[in-house]
Length: 246
Ligand code: NAP
Image 1 (cartoon, helix red, strand yellow):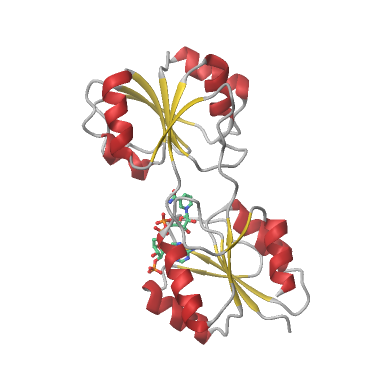
Image 2 (tube, helix red, strand yellow):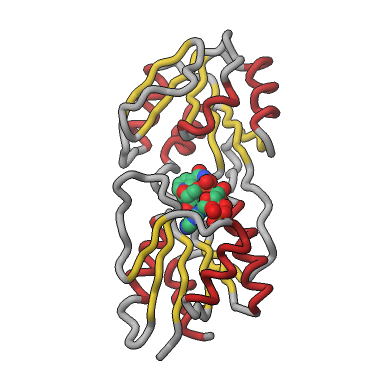
């Protein structure tokens, strides 16, 4: 028996890790999902859905399932789960790894303004922007509700109503994959003057930043939230090697 691994998921990297580890003989792999998606893509191995009930609930769960190590592979902007995992693992003396896709880095041709909170982005937009590609999730829209003089381009994976809707916007439904050429055409067609996004990292959403760079457009980039100090891997392969080495 090589132990029971809990993967805190909700990302493509978590699915990839579950796929790799579930082929290890004698290893039990449990993937945990928060339950935000109605029809989630369930990873190979066992899975469970829903919150644990905070740090205490997670500690109880780890004990009850005799978990031997935890991999926090939640989204870079899902920070609460990581802190709960760090405290619960510390209390039980369990090894914890953070699997985090590398953050995007600005290149010499990029014109990015990093912000640590949406209110900083909003102050900037008020002064500088009229036509903004707001490349953020639906749950972030409320922060931008008061910007009545700015027109927003919104893009969601599904054709769902923005809630609350900005005063002036156009909504497109598209889940990609997005290409440099496609993104450049989109930014031109809508005469975008600023892009606002979070530093989620990964290849899938990178094309809009390359297009911004090609067109010399400014990007307001929300930096990632603080995370607890833990061992860290940047890919599912590196995370699998860590698990196999403990
Ligand atoms: P969060 O702020 O870190 O977590 C909020 C609460 O949701 C946690 O305290 C926990 O509830 C529960 N939770 C989160 N991840 C869980 C998991 N993998 N398994 C079981 N419970 C979990 O996270 P969030 O921003 O709400 O995101 C929720 C989930 O969506 C995460 O799994 C994340 O990977 C995924 N996701 C998030 C984003 C994003 O932008 N935030 C984007 C893509 C995917 P209890 O305290 O009750 O345990």
